[in-house]
Image (cartoon, rainbow, N blue to C red; front, top):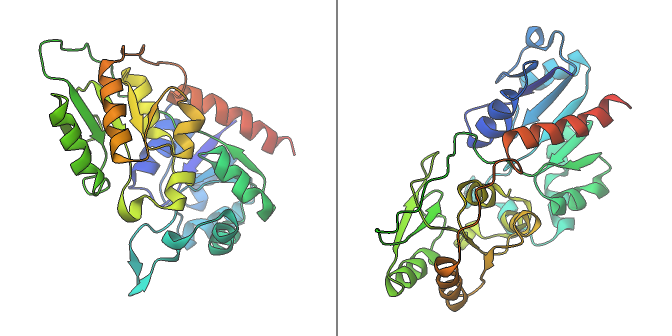
Length: 290
């Protein structure tokens, strides 16, 4: 089955859910802002995150199956046009459907790929076919041997500012435990002994905790690192062995337990790009068989 991934491109979601998945199969391709000529010979198209009106019109004229992968598709800024961002005010699945119904109507996909089963359940009442495709880890990741001579390192892998007040709590906890706390938003994280995942402030909203992907959990699994996390839905669905917390004291205890725990075996199969591609092939076979 010849699959083309398209979208505006340029985002991390595009790199991982578009370019990296396309690279797993010889007859798959990833072309940002695809035109009608790009669609020749394609069996199905996966739209990743966002698509321009021009590219969407080309897809409609083409007439084949359109699968929408809305990973991180909503505006995550605090305000829009001097008004509070409605996406950050959502507190229920019903509100989410009301706010985003037009986004899905615009694309009118044959199927929506959801990064969590919870998002799948939330969108089902809209009437679209849905399927769950959990996130894969970056195929460039390689596990590293633990350096027993160095101070232990607790890693937050993400953009600075996402943790908000949790950063200070984590730094204090690490200092008390004799560990170093490091932050990095590089595509490939630096060596560490524990991985931490949490969103603070406006980033810790209903959508983030229910519709965000498991990519940080998958990264920890690939690297063989104990995982300390706020119990977002994606993490609970894919990493039941994580060290959970919802308060500062629980965070401190979770870090302490993770530092004392044996490091798990690095994962190479589950949540790999190859695993995700195989799962996607299974999903798309049901669309083609309609």
